[in-house]
Image: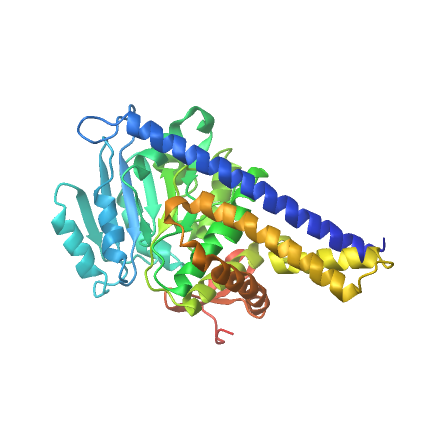
Length: 412
């Protein structure tokens, strides 16, 4: 076999190894999630709270920018957490005139039994807008744990208990961060469905596989930290120059000998009414961030998607069997067709394992999956054309390691 067909076959085989391993990991994670939920039901107090022995007061920091139809329900979910230690919620906005402020104020007023405050003063400690928004809330926190969680996440009542429990179990003696697998719920538009498909398949695939391979990968949507450990790495200020602050915070914690641990409950994103364009540019921002951090990964990842890996496999097989009775075109088409059908079945198994009962109806699966797979090819090409990204309505230019500055050219 010539070198190019051989390399194509190796990449095709690697893609299938990643896919199959990720599906098995997703099923194992789903099984663990069900066991955790069953255990929590068994140890509930008569009052409805959850028994938890040990220290664990928590400050929940929620950066909020703008209002969407799901914001009120998302924020309200954090007032119904079942946890028998003290927790307080700090909502952070960078503008007192933000459209989210009235909703936050209503939520706080409707739940006076929960300690909750609104911080509207942005502290300029760098370019990263999220850290600028939450840094004052972090520095004023005095609890053992800090839970930084985006406004688009809708929490289950047992989420906080599950996160703290994960940081304290026997497997997590070296735990520095407890993070959650992002999933998408409440799909009302085709864009929502494609986004659920992305988080439930392609994103989950690499999230499970890389963490399984021994390299901690953390998504910044929902992270629980010990406050003492955050202070040890300098707090949040040193990471305000990065757009991917979650990655570099995790790296700093890793270098101190601590690990990131995946919780058994997901971060349930609820952003009702997203358009396909919104999903596309959100996903492209992450693709460009990954390209600036993992150069090799930025090349390998697209080649392990369904379409490109199928074409590589078809090419490798056609090149190695010149005497087949089928033409090269027919053989390639047959290989790609079988490859896509099998890949689709595994993706749907992963989607069901990750999303559980929040998965979209099966009649939408094929359309959302094909759109995601085809869009992934376009997105990777488009993502390679520029280093500028849009985030929270502002444009930033990515330099080495996602250090950011305001660009002088427009977004491509």
